[in-house]
Image (cartoon, rainbow, N blue to C red; front, top):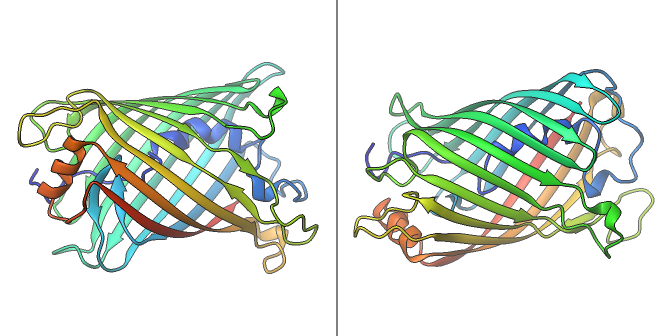
Length: 296
């Protein structure tokens, strides 16, 4: 790989999608807290959507901050087993980044992932394989095996749930930082939120505050100066979301629109790697996102 050809993925690493599959079959986001039960009550769930972002970050590594950045995705989950104490779910999907400012082919990235997750009460664990592919270059950026853990703490009696989660990503081919060694990454996240900040019975507006801390456990943030910092980045966001039930009938799935503003702060190695990629980001940045999601 060259410095301008490397794996990209949304800041909230796509490895979490496979782990969240089991939860997605039974839980809803804050903006959906007052919705009617979903139309789909079967063992297969389908979701798709897109995000538009002003800047593209992959675990604290700046990738693109110019032009249109469109990131469509599609995901399917399958209930493999269910009992009172355990639900096993399989998940497959793809996530893409289309960037008109990228030299050459605008279809910059196409990721494929497949995983299995287990939900045991409020705890969910998962393992997934992820292939980050570069259609423009005709080669992979990286391959990973990711392990994930999430906990639903809404029943603890706190003023609001923190929804903590963790992802351990182990590179088995390639490398996100273009370094000489395969790296290991640890992401720690919380996402406190309020189901409806307006108190509306007709058009609820949810607010979440996602916070992600990215750490390089081993050879993950290797820069060209030989540094390999443990601290990679911290990303803090404010995200508003609302269901689109008033415009789209429930028979066509559950649709949600969201808008977010994020501030990201980088460690020294992550800043040096981003500079080497030529995207011009500094040690911190503010970016905005807009997305549409459909679940069925």
